[in-house]
Length: 56
Image (cartoon, rainbow, N blue to C red; front, top):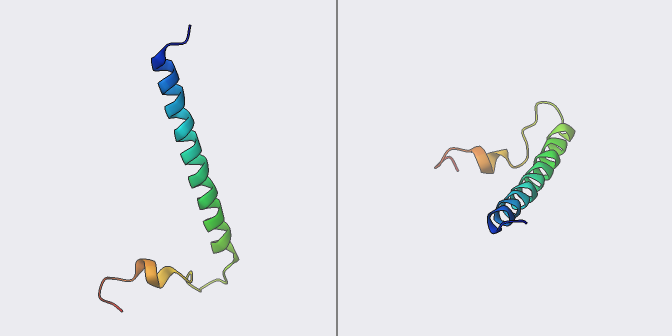
């Protein structure tokens, strides 16, 4: 017999697995984009993401 607690744990683990697969796909896409850029060129979004506050 499967308890209610087991079903909740399984559902939680399934949701965690979905979240991690989505994150992994995003990281692979980001990695592939960064591999394609020419050496020495920053990523095109780097200025927006990493510029210090007030450095506009």
